[in-house]
Length: 137
Image (cartoon, rainbow, N blue to C red; front, side, top):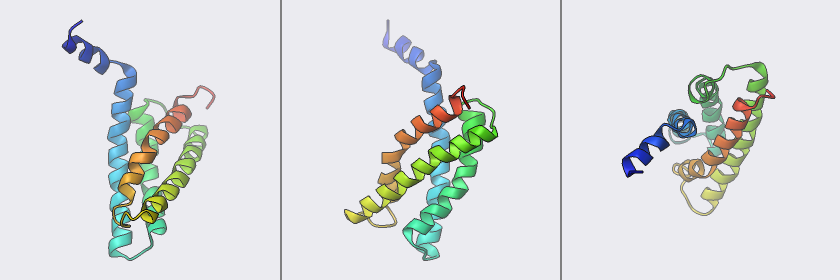
């Protein structure tokens, strides 16, 4: 099998396409969250945790609908919404922990969300995928 054929086979894998769609939605949601964080923290002078929380809530709504319709090709339901909130509750707590950890080790408040996102995004993918693709919800 040629390298081109291998790449085509990988690209046509439903899992790979799902990961790519998750990445697209995640990048947009992250940009929304970070943009709001930056506005609240650097411009409005709110603290890092408050700014992160405001950005998280706003990007959460966007993320829920696009994760259902675009990423995982599912229909939003109340049960999935509750599961999504639970998985994002865990994700939010991880973000707070890692945001403060990175600031504690010396990353400036303005930039601390960037390594935090890199740390928690893979965990979030697994949690959200489980919730939205589970036949139990």
